[in-house]
Length: 226
Ligand code: SIN
Ligand code: FE2
Image 1 (spheres, rainbow, N blue to C red):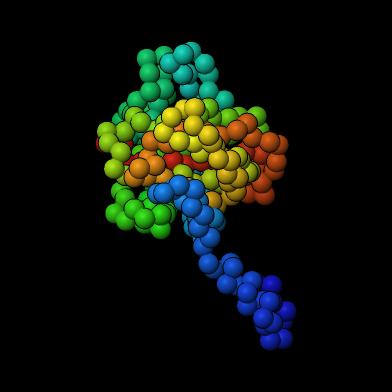
Image 2 (cartoon, protein in one colour; image 1 turned 45 degrees about the vertical axis):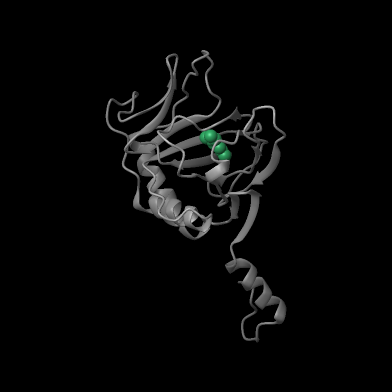
């Protein structure tokens, strides 16, 4: 904290400390929350674990069923991973690029996802899939629902790292009004229960540079897929 050496902390310093320790939770739906900075305490363990995942299953641009190449590059870890190609969206056990199983979910990823879910009102969450998305400036994610999972009783836990993005959070119909939520390095969004199938997306990223991750945003979405 900002504390001058050799002097007693002022009231202002003490408030600053409270602010840093108190996780800020913003409610964006009946069962949807933004947990500001929730990933920050684990960041020094998360980044090397991510590096290892990407050495086994590197980022790649996949094709949508409609034949478009996604602007977002992706990888996965967990017992299954989300993929898309001309035949559709689905979860697979094998990384189609390497022919090997997806890398296992690192313990620190699991810890982050479980703790965030509990904080958002979903204790006992045990994800089996983590989609890792990489956005560079200009990349976006069109409005969609997450509905390739076997059931929807568990939430989606989404962790943002790197440069900021504007998350669009809509309703259960594509045409419903969307809220714009700015997401920053370390923020976690949790949506589940009656909100689990809400449409969401990401606006094209603006140019920015992050001190740890450079000109990119990395997003993890944890789900119970099977
Ligand atoms: C997703 O919906 O898969 C990604 C959301 C995000 O990047 O914040
Ligand atoms: Fe999604």
